[in-house]
Length: 246
Image (cartoon, rainbow, N blue to C red):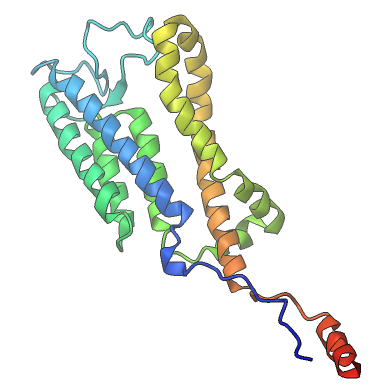
């Protein structure tokens, strides 16, 4: 009597078809940085050729009052002594970042995008743009890096814990980023009270999102290196003996 094979291993998807969490993060936050940079640049150009009063500016002009607007009138930093020139430079650099996020995020030497993002920050791209861009640039440098090293640095237990947060923490942050504008449209006062705490927490949340993505990639890499079939436990040999006796 022929023995049926009841332990067929499940097939894994080919590695080439699996998009890493680091790549998703780099593309998403790179696009976010580009869009925010375009928005800042647009409002800066509307202030004309006026000279900024210092390095720190507000992208939205005098019609906006920073102490009453929950977004603080889009604060930014510029080293260019003209609002119009600052806005044009910001939009051009932001467009370059968008092109990178859409088509070149998986190419070699992605660390160079960090230089482009620093230039965008110095040309009035905005402070939130800087955090988004920094996250995108760091994630881009990890797309082709060995993911197993993060398991070594973080430790197995912390790696598993952080990996469980992906992609839920990322989705929750995107939902908050979109929902905050809806909340502000309903009640500017509510967002005005929430903004200081949100601003202080944002860098820590972004770092946590980055670590969760890298931990997830590390876990996936380890799973791909393990044998696909179940470990032998002697039951197959016992079944062979019983079928032979029959």
